Length: 320
Image (cartoon, rainbow, N blue to C red):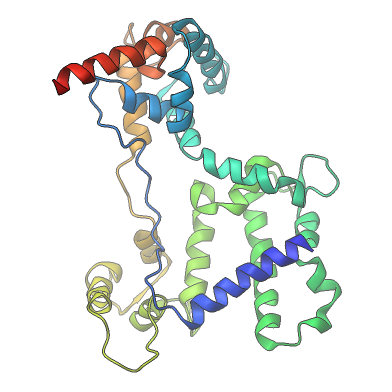
């Protein structure tokens, strides 16, 4: 029943959004900044700490002694070394930074995991998810006489199944935590981006011709309820569609153009930070890091009471 309530809430919100879209919708997925701190290694490593650990975790290191910080860092290095070969590559460091920055996503999945893992086997099968989410609807279809409700459930069930199968990389119809995270948050995973594009197309493509024309693009953001003139921002969006969305100038967006719109090729902050950390700590210049090299330069990766005190002194001196 809890799953049913969740879906009803989602459907209600979706219905409200479709019938009264008076505010602009944010469809575009941008890579987040790793930290709001300035990247000034000559003064402070705070940016690096927040990029490597996440903002909240970085604060906990600032309360540790240098010895405690280095000990915890050593354990983190072992987790970053995904192939356990004793070397940390730029790719492994980038993957770690990206995962740290998505920690809120994993925390969200952890909160709802037990709602769906009905048999407590630490996996969520498609049948478990379907039962938890759609079970009440499937068992009591007569309670959904309203055509809109019927349509919404009939539309969402196969759509969820398609997304679940895309997230299920080993094709066993049972999601581990990583796969279920990809299912609930597909925009965060490279292998799910085709699904995000397809779902966006289906949401906006009102005439089901497989494309998004200018009117459909605008209707996703704004509805003419009073028949008055369009706001200036709507006129600007029409120009955006013509100038930047419709790349081949055929009057509509296909899936490639939708991908270009909602997933712009932003600056890769995680890649840049991973390269920076390797460059600054790679003593033998083999473009990889050993645990020893990282621990030798530990205060670039994590803080401690000592580094925090030193940065406070520097900051206070600069302010004088």
